[in-house]
Amino acid sequence: MRTSAARERKTEQSHDQVGARMRQFRTERGLTLRGLAARAGLSIGFLSQVERGVSSIGLTALNSVAAALDRPVAEFFADGDATTSDGAAAVLPSHFTLTRAESGATEYVSGQVTYRMLSDRGPNLVLEPMVVHIAPGGRREEAYAHAGEEFAYVVTGELLYEVDGVEHRLRPGDSVHLRSTVPHNMYNDTDQVTTVVSVVTPRLF
Image (cartoon, rainbow, N blue to C red; front, side, top):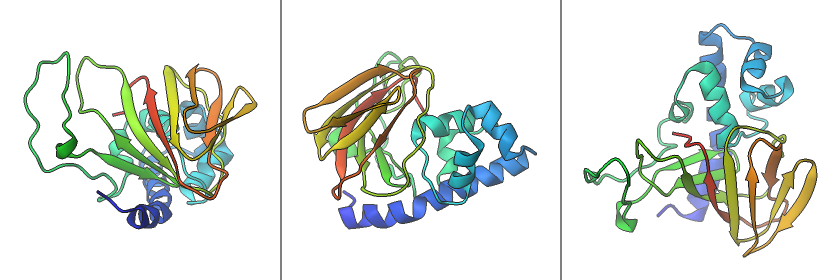
């Protein structure tokens, strides 16, 4: 398992890598920041900060950017930012997956946030379950609305969760469940890593 120190080192580097990939894919498509912002439903200023490595971007917002650029989300992460098990996955029916603890899980790091995917891909499944580790500090991501629903349950630490302009402080055992079409964001304003179990729709990968 990745140590907390290794996760912190990876976090320090990752938002620069994601931003660089975003700029590369945008210029390859011949899009301006304004054009990408219009397609992705995000502000020009925020996307500019992400490209310059000043701000990180959450997976749901990155999913909109990826769709606007016609790229898979995984391509925004530099080699090594996604770690997977070496074990071969069993062939299972399309209506379910079975993910064993010993087989490991894929992790994606974006800025202060590490997403540990809890489920293998399934063609007929719509939920995206994750364990999310949110390091303290960094710039706060702008509130963002998108299709689907999301659920977050705080396991350790504290989380400031904004929904439709109202801030809610979540502590261990607290949870929030919302339609993602309502603008929302989350931020760790403490000095400790916060761990959250999150489920979102639609699937991001």
